[in-house]
Length: 198
Image 1 (tube, rainbow, N blue to C red):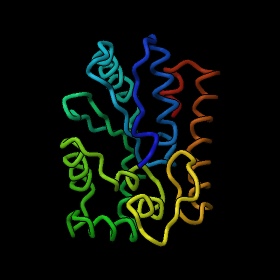
Image 2 (cartoon, rainbow, N blue to C red):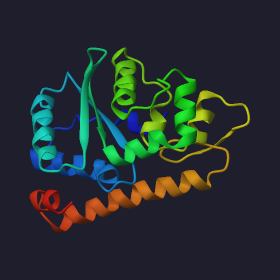
Image 3 (cartoon, rainbow, N blue to C red):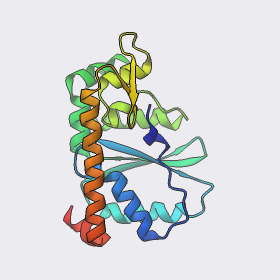
């Protein structure tokens, strides 16, 4: 569904640069403009065990983000980072909820059950198309990606955009602005101070 699914930290960087990379990527989730983000940590990278420990340490200092960690195809650890309030609002939005129910999600909405439902799907080694909803992409773009006949590919701008691009462009700019805001904070303040401030 999107380029962000390939988010993967596999560079040989020190802890500070990893933390900055992670916080910048998660900026939109931290600032509440994006409900979730997913990142892969390949088993082949020996430093990733340490990085996973560092993530838990970082997120212990910031309660705005929660996460679910799971094994994906015995090739990597995937982590779904999410802003509970924003993700709950996104999933329970009428059109999104109607769509999710139409593809097999439980009829009675429960945030934790829906979250576990998509994680179980991903554990089987398949990233379901509806991940776009969880990541904050407009429903029209998810439907277009699935193959809705009335929605034609308009462009690729962070993800595949279908139909009228105005809503998608606004979302994309919100995500970019939040990343830039986080980058600016990290340029002028140390990581611990940024974690305390946000």
